Image (tube, rainbow, N blue to C red; front, side):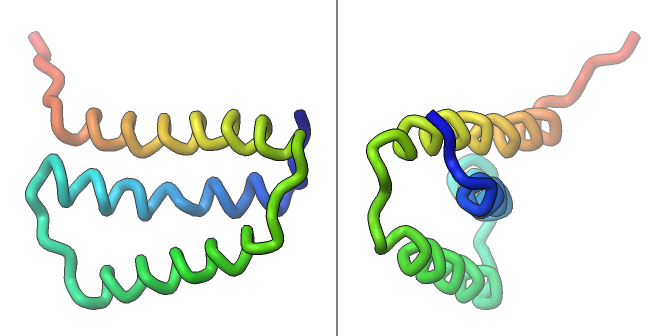
Length: 87
């Protein structure tokens, strides 16, 4: 059920990547070459970080943290895309 703080921190650092992908798909923004190379470096680092495998109980904790990680960019995205009508 528990995961080390380093894994949780690493997963939380994925938020900018998710915001970039949401911008591509929903806002039709085209990323610059610097952004694409940053994504490639981040994904390569993630592969190296998790290449050793996970323990049985770590998988549950990672899923729980990933739900929180997905919630943050979704709320940032929707707050910026959907205007609030003020009376």
